[in-house]
Image 1 (spheres, helix red, strand yellow):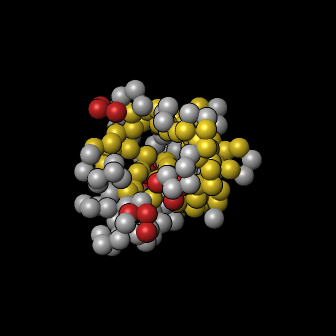
Image 2 (tube, rainbow, N blue to C red; image 1 turned 90 degrees about the horizontal axis):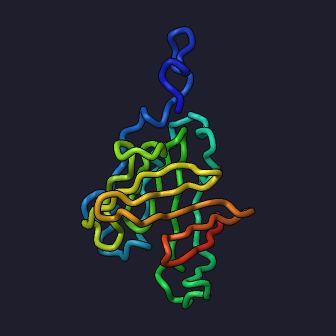
Length: 180
């Protein structure tokens, strides 16, 4: 991760670091109009729009807005009405920071360095109150989330395959998403 000393030249800041932007978290009840289902709520503005820090070493470029195009459960196609088939998410990245915005939640991995301190510490989209804590690392081009506290043992992986983003949610399911 870049440091402030890396970005100063002649006393002028040359790069806005991901760490210069305050951590984002899901507001009470989720973002957007609470009268709408979470997957129909308007997303808030970009959190890392001002950042121009390059992606960290080993971080694949997953930036953009993605929509699920296929879903498998136990290796079989999931029903077309499964809730994950409606999933749309926005991914922002700068340095080792990754922020996911989707379905009312904002999951901000302050730095994907495997530490609890920089982990995503937020709530689940399920009810906007159940705590969710995941640390993350980039392992050979794969973004790996590891559940902490009550979610210990849950591992979520995301990686690029061609133009698709693959999202493996522990042993529950695997979704393939495309940029929209």
